[in-house]
Image 1 (cartoon, one colour):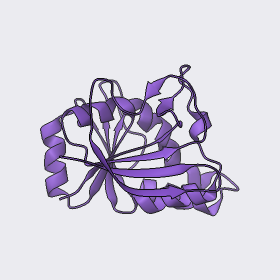
Image 2: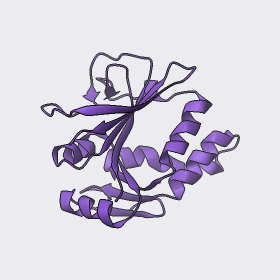
Image 3: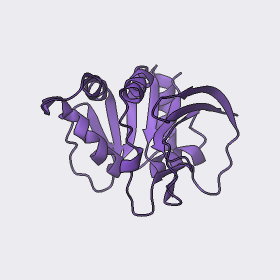
Image 4: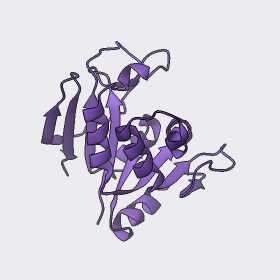
Length: 187
């Protein structure tokens, strides 16, 4: 059975976007962080995205065509391209990447079946979609890549009104000040 992992870059005060919708402050300019994210994604066979997150991430479909890309960026692009993607959207007409399908509604029972049947891990990326998965009790692990910045408000990593009891499984510090925290959701 695969795990469903909620994974995102966050501010130190656990926001994935600031109050203006910006998240550029969270993109680490650190090859070690990028390489580690690629390593973490190796056992993941399916990414679950909402439309906005997909539209941000679809850059990686063609990132290898950008002249002068660093090797660690190319490695992540290959990883992203080689992974199946499910996009939950009522408005997106067609996917613009390979290995991608669109679902109109988030169906917790269908995601549970994916966890049981696929034989690999899945990630849910984006706070709105993750909130649905968390509220449905589907998330097994939370991976936070904390950037050394506090933004003071915006879109939180965790949904409001939900308590999750977590167990720290792993932590890792990077020279850039980024800290990775891996938690299991206690059942």
